Image 1 (cartoon, rainbow over the protein chains, first blue to last red):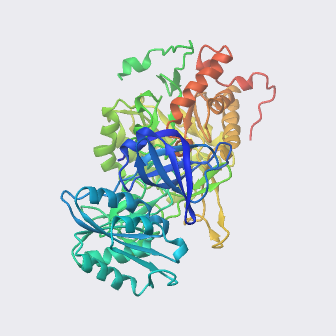
Image 2 (image 1 turned 30 degrees about the vertical axis):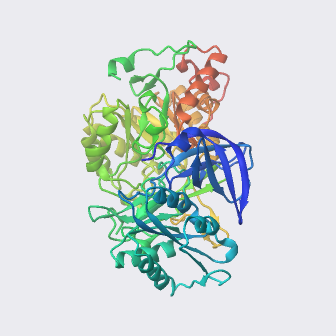
Image 3 (image 1 turned 135 degrees about the vertical axis):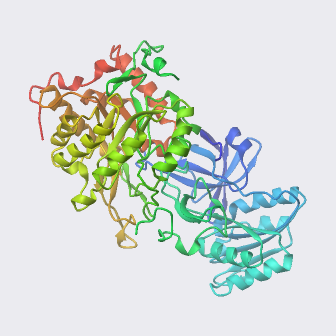
Length: 269
Length: 333
């Protein structure tokens, strides 16, 4: 489990990134503990009726600050946050060639991950997908890090056209073209399922980060569960916020998200 | 922390004695966690020193592993939330092997919440928990559905509630406090309370969530996968305060023996804890507030201490039931 702090973090910067906001907050302890893949759980502003928290991706840590990716401008100058939370992307022991697959704003954490992989002497290539050019996230920064950036949009407004029946073939080509040793993916469940299947088919490990609703973020509420095959071969419902959000894609029961399949331990007949 | 230390009076820097009864035992303070909101302690321990809680109440343990219900399991509602988790858990075997020892090693005074589909399952669970290190008490989640009564909750019926408590008391050490957790949905909560105490309950946990529902307007279907769920959070608090007040009134009036009441339902601040105490509780549990602020228990304890000191109350127990003093007519159901 991550070692988070509960903090009131001052907002020290905010700028638009496409349809999203990159919000910089000061929180030295959380920044020091950050690893790519971690997230933050934000409380509603004081006085709001909402008693739950909402998850926010942490884009990067820099000194004593964290950059969060939020849908809107923060409503208060100080954010009540818990961070870092979740299980981050595992890093390879030796320099590796990694394919990073992101979808829309979910791709956010992959950029800091790419920096760490490159710092360790590895190579990276990106596949960035989105419904349209305006919903793409991180393509510019990705191109600063590597010439190997493939953009896919569903409406064809940027890069190659993406469709449900072509996604697997495109991903497979990308995987083969760079000879990836491993895959990191941060996307919606359909693309994660596709990339997991492609990677598994080539015998390549695929770490997937699922963007799930996390009502508390700390593992207490059991609201963000998904079916995952455990090391002992038994499938159980585990928490996206605590055991995840990063999972070995080959173990996630992608076709059974939102269900309690009958072979799960403790499933009701 | 040893039992001997637990029993000593805890006088803090503001001179307020926070010790509180739990069954016939004494805890250093009245703060607990409500079942289902503190897991088995591991996650919460990162935010709150668990051995400083009066007790930690686990999420409900069943005999066998349970996958629980499909998602969505939690939905936010005004000043509260609805949940339908379905008692996801490892079952008693793994709880005893893995979770309870972890709590015991850390000196956590653990109250194990347990439930079954049948009366016999409550008794079997209680028998297996008796004498285990670290178990400070048992809490019977009789708001669970009773398969022998068309899936109606045990706590809907005073006679069935009596049978469950009786069956558990028959197989447990008399010194181990057994609490029955009551439902605010019972038609006559004082009758259920009286039945539980007559069967030997050493205390009452009040209250469980109230059944509720929310509709997803865009999808035009229930927002929870299970349809109905339990309402908790501040939205539940006035109902819970009413229940505590009614049952405490029945005890004061001699209509049932007096046992400690552990209150829960939307406690977020020391003032909320004081409200339950004035209504008649002698312990207060923090539930869904933990999902928002996992550091809440010790903050609430500090705030409660300050509220008591501001009222020149030297002992927490002096505040119990104070709201009844001037009431001439004790209202019943």
